[in-house]
Image (cartoon, rainbow, N blue to C red; front, side, top):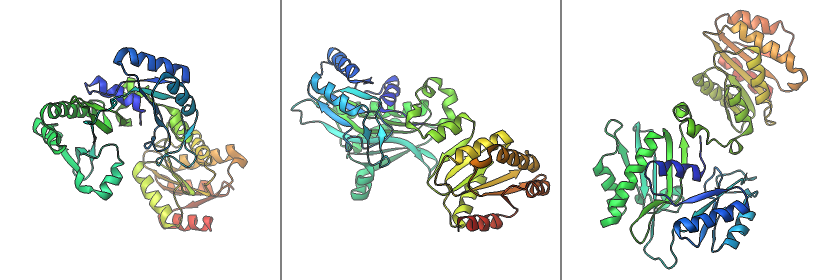
Length: 397
């Protein structure tokens, strides 16, 4: 689950990570009130207005701007709220901005001793350990740094049994070229950041930039945070931070129906029980010359209601030209799944305008195939993987 910047900063602050302070606003009046409150609390007279969307590169799209007085705060907030923000990480259509974060200005006028760094915490899948990735090139796209100056990117793997050790935090600070008070502050920052990552059950924390001020304070100016969905049951307060407006409406609907669904960009919808079989089915679709339009795991109870809901969700995608149903009947009997498919098809009637290929294997697979073949419906029943691939290819021709 992705979070907005202001939500990520709330989590960081709760674990003792120093942040650039800010207040979220949903309209221009709230933005002005937020700026006044920041002035009274921090003394800032300049403000940074930041669009809150789940996408990076907001500044490049005009979603991050500096305001030098309250009139500019009101004007900029009015322009940003409601706009369709297009960044390198959004579609060509962009994302609608529903709120902005009004932040204190931490780049003091005339200050020349500030430095920006990049720090992220994530899982290193090659080693199976958490990793801190960091660079002196803060404020830039880390992908660009990796391509053009890879020697400026450092990594530190963390032993899951020992956690982040003090010498590792000091090593990170040294590699960033810090000394004295700034080094001590960075050690505290990195340690608190890693604690926040672990205790919030996150899959990624990306802070870009991390700022060193002229008085050697270290703080997070931005925060890109992804939480592990599987651990949200342990964090009810974090689960409430979910902004459904930022997610695919189809995925939200599927999730509400208890279906594991991921929207893709292909032309063949797939309905499967089990994540492993779903991955194999997507390979099958690719082999047939098609492209998977989605990942849809209906789980172990593929009854008529669940199958019908799956069909309706898949068919919301106008790019879908065929649907492949691939079910292995272990606990669930194939004949019950087949009956569910038949009943769902009859309930939907003319709503189904694309061919459906069904492959059922496992308990009562023979009876299931017979049931579908005898239904009189335009549903193509197959037995083998290759047969399914050939049939998909035929339907797309």
